[in-house]
Length: 130
Image 1 (cartoon, helix red, strand yellow):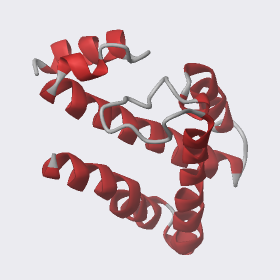
Image 2: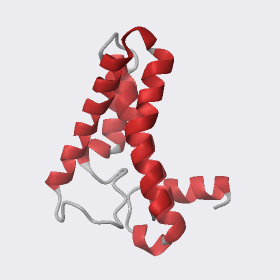
Image 3: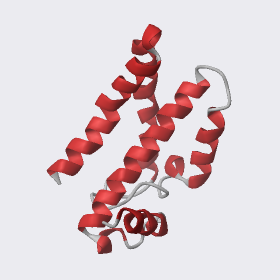
């Protein structure tokens, strides 16, 4: 669980800073702040009860983490700044949450048995041979 938390929060805070610095060097701080702002997507957790459940896989479950929402985030990549940067941040956030779900699936498959992304988790796990 400790490794999962370290990976999760590093991917949410440290890695976006590295992406911003590596690919948007001239205004990396502004891009990093936009990346951080995309974490507001987690406000959709307030739309369900309970708000937080440790074993719940939010990928594909929460409204702004749904496949339809992810399709919109992909579309943002085809627009100019700042929409492209917002799309990158949101898609990176979704990837981070998917990795978190994979950790949960690896440690306790029964815990995510009702996850909307269960088939995706199984496929990725099988591909990675976890």
